[in-house]
Amino acid sequence: MQPLKILFLSAEVAPFAKAGGLADVCGSLPKALAALGHDVRVVMPAYAPIEASYHSGQGTIRSHPVTLQVPMGYGTVPAGVLEATLPGSKVPVYFIAEWHRFASRAFFYGYWDDPQRFAFFSRAALDLMIAALGWRPDVIHAHDWHAAPAVTWLATAGQADGRYANIPTVYTIHNLMHQGTAPWEIFHDMGILTHGLKEEHYGEVNWMARGIYHATMITTVSPTYAREIMGWEGGSGLDALLRHRSFDVHGILNGLDYEVWDPTRDPHLVAPFDAARLDQRQHNKRVLQERFRLPQRDDLPLVGMVTRLDRQKGLDITGHVLHLLLNNFAGEAQCVVLGAGAQHYVDMLEHLAGYHRDRLSIFIGYDPGLAPLIYGGSDLFLMPSLFEPCGLGQLIAMRYGSLPVVRATGGLADTVRHGVTGFTFQYYSSDDCWNALKEALYIYHVDRESWQAMQRTGMANDYSWVSSARAYQQVYEWAIARVRGW
Ligand code: ADP
Ligand code: GLC
View: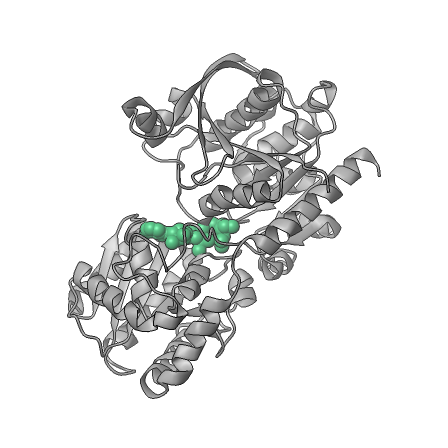
């Protein structure tokens, strides 16, 4: 097939800015597409750490000579541009540098004007690539609601300008819960004239709904989640809209960046290993226990969690499960948790850790250096999500020989096979979760051979981008064909 020019728009791209899996995907899928011969370019905002890295001159981020005058309804807004490449590739990444909206803020998100900030980002990204650099993509791949304003503008106001007209768009839903809503004035700011959607309250714009409504093709990050969001329970109020577009919605599983997530040469592991040297994991376990100040006991099963502390991640059922685990209801065990997020979950974990000092240890914060040690040193990886569009944690855990215990929802249901590569449970309840964990611990203690067979099966699975990148390529072709009327 012909090489395509593909423009990625995302609020997060690893390793430049990461809060969760969105960054992993947007930092690795472009490389996999480039390896298929496509010309992929990525645009994201220049948050404070990115500008700081540029000003320090230490990193690889350079300034780009272009200055943008981004057209917004209230006038044009000047913005600078920084650039870099995705590590291990030639894929260019451009950063929209606008101090007031991005670099002056301590966090990526969480501000009252997020919908306006990302509308600006979207409009600036299009202005940069198409008007300023004259690089007209064959297809634009927009990720989550932050990039939906670009999809919306292209389908409405952008059609009047020949430079922007008829560019196919693919919109990927990574998390339907977060939708980005703003007052209708935002359309005036962007020069958009359109009608309201049933999903939008009077006077409100819903960027997630708009992305779904206006995109040429829609994808989400696992086949099961693609089905779940079509129903009332998983649809977050947008299920009717999704059903309306169901013919164009495709579930494509995320892959992992095998350059980054590789237990044979991960620099964060003290003892690299592969399926033939599983005994090496013991060294990682000891260092993990030491880092978390737990007794260095080889004989105890060690349960790990690496997670955003968010309702989505199943923390409401985790408390009781940890209570049972730490009170030895399935024999002695240890547990480590690395997480950042909601204070009430921090309080819950601190309470449990305070009571069970020699069994549970927590690290509250975001630490990309510590996460690999948990994947490579724990025996079990707990991920009891309420819902999970795809989930990368369980994929990394399986690749690193830690058996996942997960709720069979979304991408977790598509990737973990009960009794083959991990343990699954159906109902969102502490009881069901505990039963799965108890079964796992039983096998750990009594049947080491089966345990290791499961580890090896999980490690031998292909979680790379190879087949999923081809699936995206197919969706791009469909989107292009649709717009060109083929
Ligand atoms: P989500 O994107 O919903 O948070 P995923 O499982 O898709 O869930 O991706 C989570 C990613 O973020 C994984 O790469 C995981 O290792 C990483 N991660 C999550 N929390 C932390 C943390 N506190 N410190 C370091 N890495 C984290
Ligand atoms: C979202 C989802 C997660 C998914 C990630 C990358 O953060 O919560 O399940 O893996 O996006 O697509």
